[in-house]
Length: 261
Image (cartoon, rainbow, N blue to C red; front, side, top):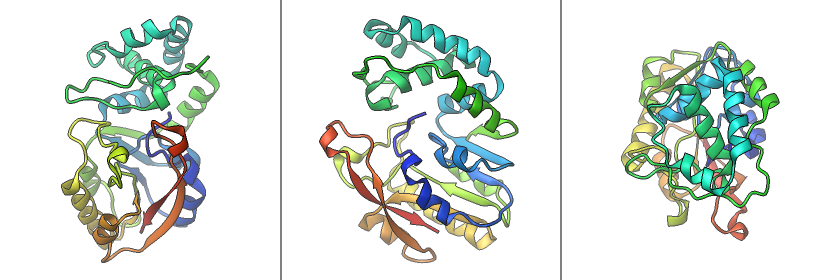
């Protein structure tokens, strides 16, 4: 799925930072999972606090054929009225396959594929201006399902990785970024946000894992706040990355990000 802060355009730089060998692979902010699906590590644990996203990945792993049927039905009925009716549905009590189809449908049809919720956990992104969006891609879904076989997928806070990772394991943290401007503050993908206290807690956790012998890699904004947070005990590399999500197309371009080890 397309996800804000997704790493599909940064994979070459991320690959250079991967350790040559490690035990288990952990990704506590899985989002779109670009690095995981590219690297395809065995024995992986994928996590996120977004329960709808986690339920979606589990359905892709465990019930992909039912998901394909549901998405094909959405594709046949898709129009503006259908989008808003489905978007505003109280989805959390629905079966997992319906939640997964809801997530993927909105990901393919909402403006810029953006997932954003209000304080009531209601999706509030308007419809995108797509002529004929590909809502159901059976080939890709089945390929993703195959990669996810044997993968542990859980809904949990990033701090839980401290209880799971042991010496020799590898953890990739791709949290909501420290905003470099008001327009770049995309922390409302799950209720509660991700503010300065969480950023500092993430830094402390990464340092604790490093001292344990766990190999860590973090992504974040290239800004003074991040450089200050990771000034001791870490190496920080500046990389160029495309900005994929902005309300104005002319403002989508290259920005600098920090890769931290």
